Amino acid sequence: MQLLKQMLPPAALAAAVAAALLFVFACWWKNASRCAGAIAIGAGYIAGHVVAAGWSPFPPRHATHWLFWLAVIGVIAAAADALVRSKRTGRLVIWAIICTIACRLILQPKFSYAWSAAEGWLCVFAIALGVVVLTCCLDLLERRPFGTATLFSVATVLCGGTCVALILSGSLLLGQLACILTAIAGTCFLLIIAVTAPFHPSGAAAPLSLVCAGLWLSGSYYAELPATSALLLALAPAIALLPVGKKSNFQSRALAYRTAFVAVPVAIAVVLALHASPPLDY
Image 1 (cartoon, rainbow, N blue to C red):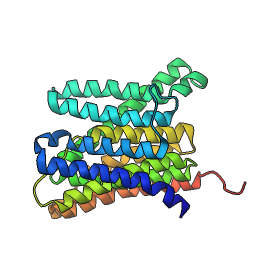
Image 2 (cartoon, helix red, strand yellow; image 1 turned 180 degrees about the vertical axis):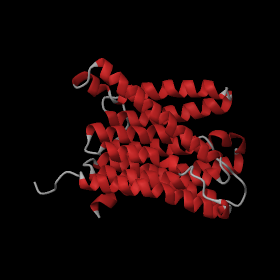
Image 3 (cartoon, rainbow, N blue to C red; image 1 turned 45 degrees about the vertical axis):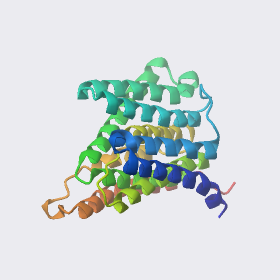
Image 4 (tube, helix red, strand yellow; image 1 turned 120 degrees about the vertical axis):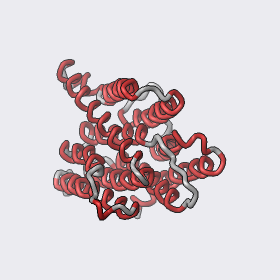
């Protein structure tokens, strides 16, 4: 009960902020739908982060501080992409640079105390490539028929599993921040399903992938999240791109199948985190 009381207020505020923004975009500002999803995710997470962990200073002093700014960067990148509409190759290059810088900043303590420069940069480039692939997978999901609802459904399962895995790995704060993302994604999914008028708030892939990657990196390197669990969580959205078969052409059924596909590696990741969780018998 105490855990619920601690996690509920920031998650509820984040969900309310995201819902209010989506309502404004759906009713009065549909021209901004190309980045509405990013703004809802980013603004909701920022509000929840402030309640859960306080305002993050700049420059950040800890990895969790960077999660706040990663949400800001993700929103800015999505909005810029919606306004400029550059070629796909240019977008990928710019996004790869952003992901590389973000990974390097989060892993700064490892460069200072554990890794050599060559070892560190090799890890950073590999992780940044993974974040780019994750973003592309989420973006492809969003572009499918009924894609916006599918993206938020998949994100709800993914972030929910991340929340449980991080709590089991000994970091209540990281789990609380993942719970904020879960509440936002779930609320956005329910709103999109409930709204009868066609509305497709896009752009959520950028802030979602950056913040999730930051959570997994922080859990793996600064908590007890197994690397295998983090990898399974990162790969889960790609499984949602699997074909669902000709008999599954109905949008609701395809959405259910894709969400179920994602739930399998997420569940395995949680089980692995449970087995590797720190002992409680101190």
